[in-house]
Amino acid sequence: MAEGPTTPAVNKWLVAMTVMVPTFIEVMDISVVNVSLPHIQGSLNAGLDEVTWVLTSYLVSNAIVIPITGWLSSVFGRKRYLLFSISLFTVSSLVCGSAPSLKVLIIARIFQGLGGGGLQPLSQAILFETFPVAEHGLAMAVFGMGVVMAPILGPVVGGWITDTLTWRWVFYINLPVGLLAIVLALIFIYDPAYIRRKIFSIDTKGILLLTIGIGALQIVLDKGQRDDWFNSRFILYMSIIAGVALVLFVIVELTAEHPVVNLRAFRERSFTAGNIIIFTGFGCMFSSFVLLPLYAQTLMGYTAFWAGLVLFPGGVASFISMPVAGILLRKGVNPRYPLAVGLGIMAYAIWLMSDFNLQADFVAIAMPRLIQGFGLGLFFVPVTTATFMNIPKEETGNASGIFNLLRNLGGSFGVALSSTMLAQQTQVHQTFLVEKITPYQPAFQISYQQILEWLKLHQPSLAYDKNVMAFIYQEILRQANMLAFNDSFRALAISTAVLIPLTLLFRRVSGTRIPTEIH
Image (cartoon, rainbow, N blue to C red; front, side, top):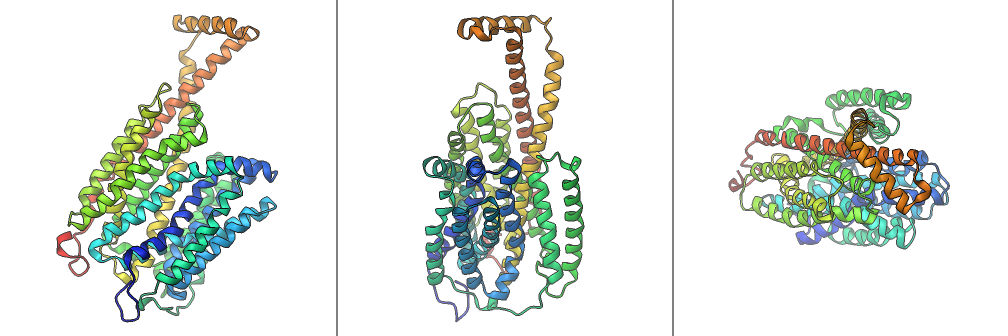
């Protein structure tokens, strides 16, 4: 898997399959539970605010572990830590599925997040170790197919399992996958010589500040919109705690002899540029993943299953374009070029979503998502490859932890900001439309009479003035919501497009790290 006499030779595709099996199921677990929340709420007799902690607890514990994965691998050994992570995730899934109360479920979800958090950066680091440097683009195509397809399939799989069986099977499906992953890891994964259990002094301050800062930040992003942001004292206090803790964390890590997260990796310009692009680009992409099925369900009347299917064509397109991107990089194409094209395609696709209306059919909704899927493959693979080009192998674990944390935080920030914009713009458009519509307008009078005649014909018991006005008001709300969706998609498209010039910040590749044909 890596250079060194103590590392047995293992087929790289067997290693790739070994690390992607648990990573796929862990990433999918972030979104697969979403559609099951109403069923969990009813089964465990919980309130809406209480049941959302099933999601928040997982995200918080997941985010805390991701950046310290490289350090944990150095202390305990990568294979040992990988096996522990898979085992903890699997056992916690069993407890989640059999949880007799919401309290037990939330505690189990915390441990499930702690176990699953290390799987993404571990998988990425192992793939970089396993594949030759010239094939890193191909390796990231494999990684990207798992990381990107999982959240797309999550709602569809979760909805089908919940409707067909019960919500508990959303967790039980992790058990056979986890056991398979443990067996594969025991057989095919080995530590490179340089990573064999280095003994460091424990960076207690760094771990404590990171836990408090990232935990508080994730809670703010997850609950801010629901609690009206800084009008809530809880959100305000958590924001202050997150800000202070993270500032102190940066100071401590830059001065510690053995930091739990080595922030000096940001001295490499390409690494910094890649993290900026993945944070913003993934945030815009993931926000569109959230807004699109929400539009389909709330305004177009789609079921959760059909709303999930709207995302599926884009997943297929990504599945096709990611290997293509990997092959292009393997043939020596500079990652800047497919990355710029991918960002452009993604921006164009999201811009098309800003033209949606209340008469759109399934094909009209799914087509921009299909186009976005092709762009996503040309975005994710090159940006990951270019970000790590000049990172030494022994620093890959640390760099991968930072990269995956910022990618996930980008998704959280994007969803929080787009959800807030959607709510605010809905109010703005509602106010504007109400001001413009008066009983004295001929168009209003015609619509009023048409609705009244329809009620007299189909539902005579409702043919009253107040019911006609209620119908008109509901239509105003739908139109205001639709315009707000258009505004949100437009903002995401612009935010994606402005990233294109940042691709020029990537350095030319060091000749000691990458063959010259990739320059």
